[in-house]
Amino acid sequence: MIKNYLLSDQWKYAGVKKIEDIKIEHLMPCLECHLPQTKFATDDVAVEIAKAAVNGDLNTLSKLSINCLVCHHDKAIIHQWVDGPPEDNVIYGNKSGKHEGVSYYSMIKKSPVLQESIFCGQCHGLGPGFHYPNPVHCAMLYGSYLNAYIPSGGTKTCQDCHMEKGHFMSAYSDSDMAKKAVRVDVETLAYYFHPKAFEWTPLAVVTVRMTCNAGHRIPDG
Ligand code: HEC
Ligand code: HEC
Ligand code: HEC
Ligand code: HEC
Image (cartoon, rainbow, N blue to C red; front, top):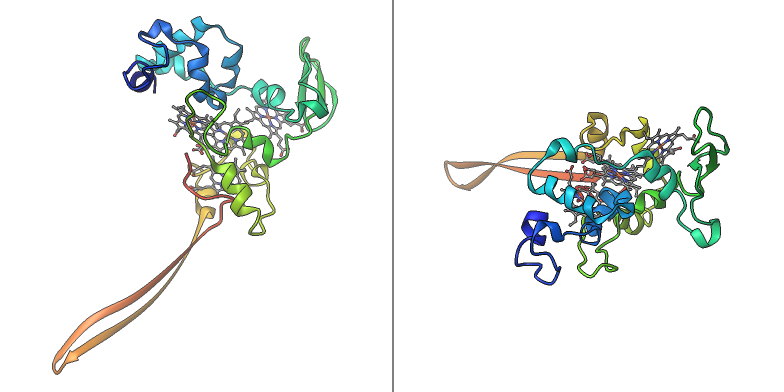
């Protein structure tokens, strides 16, 4: 992404001529979902991440991922005018209590959204991020869930289907999940076509019905 766009002539108004010009604001349109904690970092970190990406430094890149606090703090409250912003020192889970054995984040409070599909919808997107000067779009599954699955009578949440095995978030790379994804019904009829005397052409009618059992269209992203 960085190699092809930010450092090319294609995004000529981005203000980036060389890798050192890259700032956090240039990375957020992707990292808002892929590494949301970047919003708290300084521009030096943006340059470091960009260098690792351009140089294909997988060792550094593999250390960057969505961590516990992204889900159990920053994204755990959506309607902040109703529920207030996430509080310092608090981890958000399914119930409230003391967070034993730690000196910081020593309280647990119930998140109003952790078990709801909208929680996952924050990153499994609806469409292009129009709030950026140069919108991009990537994941759009939540749109399909809301507008296709739910209106056709779907009742499960993302968590019901994807967290049966916990935080592994099983999808196509889990064979049990992949098997559930599509139901395929095949009907066949074989016959001979007899256009003229002494000529028989073997033919078949094959009817294939594929039904998507995922809570959204597949594939995505
Ligand atoms: C709205 C949140 C969101 C934004 C913004 C976003 N992504 Fe994604 N991206 C995801 C999610 C969620 C997935 C994985 C799930 C899927 O495929 O539906 C994904 C998948 C990917 C994958 C495939 C990863 C794999 O393991 O196969 C790549 C590569 C990727 N994104 C790159 C980008 C780049 C580059 C940008 C910015 C131009 C970007 N994304 C912006 C949420 C986002
Ligand atoms: C992608 C978001 C995400 C990330 C990252 C994540 N969690 Fe969770 N976690 C959830 C969700 C959603 C639930 C609730 C699942 C449910 O109840 O159906 C949950 C539930 C839990 C629970 C049970 C909470 C309770 O009150 O019952 C614990 C403990 C937990 N997570 C610990 C962790 C730890 C430790 C990490 C980091 C190693 C982590 N989680 C990372 C989304 C996440
Ligand atoms: C902070 C943003 C964020 C949140 C919140 C989030 N995801 Fe994701 N999720 C991602 C990104 C980014 C990827 C792609 C990771 C990659 O391949 O590099 C992903 C990947 C996935 C995958 C694909 C895993 C695979 O095998 O490739 C599944 C399934 C998934 N998420 C389900 C969920 C569910 C269910 C929730 C809610 C409980 C959730 N996610 C919440 C950002 C998020
Ligand atoms: C009824 C069960 C069900 C529900 C509800 C559901 N999913 Fe899925 N999802 C699946 C199945 C099954 C697959 C595996 C598809 C495959 O093998 O390609 C899948 C695949 C995925 C993938 C991988 C995308 C890809 O390209 O295959 C992601 C990411 C994902 N789901 C996220 C979500 C999120 C986020 C929600 C809620 C908004 C959600 N799912 C709701 C069953 C469900």
